[in-house]
Length: 270
Ligand code: MN
Image (cartoon, rainbow, N blue to C red; front, side):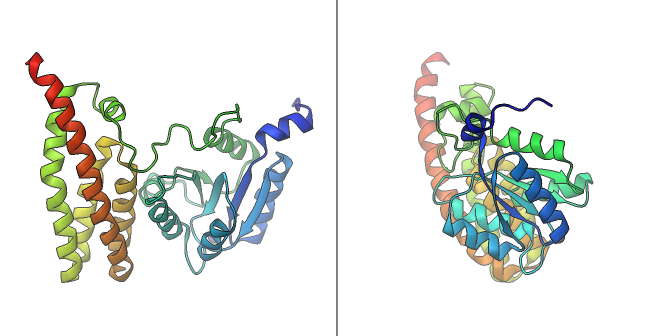
């Protein structure tokens, strides 16, 4: 393999990576592979250390083991997405999983992971994953290209999600504006009644519906909520549910504005 001259290449490709892995062998191996690529690596061995590290310094990407003590990878990424909800940022998080089954991949995505790597870690797969989520710097803002941030839903992004069809946009946004608040109310009620299964179902339906609009923040929140409800952790679900309520209302307002704007333009063409 031909290597580019170190100094210049490293300037462009060196990234600050947070590696969360409780197995010391796996952690050392992955850290060494990353360092060989010129990256700076900080280690964490559980989710709590991840959250602490994120408060102390900025990272370009997180590699996170799914099974860790104290706070596992799925719960941790849920909390990260929840915190990001107010900032509109989205740090790429790649799950490290011992299971490569479809259901595990789905669980990772639902929890807020952007991708996954099967263990044992292969150098080439690791390089590919890093390259996919962190393309080489070109001088512009490297912040997560292709990942819609927070509540920044625009008419253009919305149309892009909806086949660039204004009439379709008006129709499905109307549906969501009707259904969304009902589901949010159901989630609140289920939480008050202590009905985990009902909460999970409402969150699941909401997530599926909101996913059509690229409303990443509420999709991630609903996914985390569903996850917690399925695990029966209603105490942890409560703050997430409140957050989702607020965000869903915000998303609803934005969608209504865009819908009205599109409708006013589209009416004349009827
Ligand atoms: Mn582990």
